[in-house]
Length: 382
Ligand SMILES: *Cc1c(COP(=O)(O)O)cnc(C)c1O
Image (tube, rainbow, N blue to C red):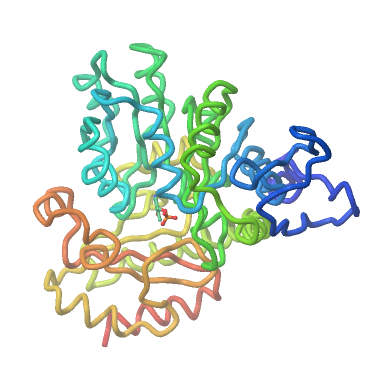
């Protein structure tokens, strides 16, 4: 099946008991057994639930994996991956991560004896001096949040695997979605999503996803999902499945609108810098073009005026874009990373990587582009 068919049919079957085309919401915690241990494949919904199974099969299908897992949030999906590791293990991660991921790594898992190294993944060889016998996991985000940096998944995976094929490469594919890039095909072992964002697509759920193509890895992750218990509920699974069915057409419009907005900002006199890998002027355009089908709907920019007051005034001016955390929904959102999504990163580190007061991040939705451009123009000029 091609991708645009997989979003609708991948891993799906009509409900075996009724023929229902959409999977019913199996709002149940438990399942009748005819004799102890004799059941129809479902015992207790933390282990498995039919609505979740339908979604997990869709997850696997759209990322070209063999197994998918649905979690109660994106962060709980990351938590599951880290729980495969042992004290003393080391992780090499990108230096421009989603704030909550960084917070989990440094504030939760360091105290359990995991060691994290943060490097600029734009230069794949940056990881080489950090690899040692304790290295167990490479954690990539590409494009990154919020600076839209690009990591070459294929190059990094092959560098790492040449040194030690047991080191796992995981990619947070939230920003790109499988419509734009397929990390498992590029050599990664694990794909992670905040399904809260583009996969769900309608800002109505909080959910996480993992996808893998290796049966042993799937078994380990399923054990932690089951034993740790951070599973997604059936109602949310239904909504995610419904969202995924339009992923490809939503993404098409996100990409068109994203490019138009990035080009508009690039020539705007009040804008100092635009971060969008689709611009030919972007420092990572070539790598982005190699591994992505298009460039998505996330656009960040910095104002020439570096004061927080000016940024706040502009943020308050938006009418079509909503000032809110999160991204990836059909509606356009605007966000101030320093005070909102990335407030958990210490100021010093933020400054070093370039998350400053004048940085504004847009999640460009699928509204009419004329209305979005007018809103942006108006917000910048008032
Ligand atoms: C939102 C987000 C997360 C966290 O996911 P939640 O669903 O909010 O727990 C992780 N990575 C990226 C890139 C995100 O945007």
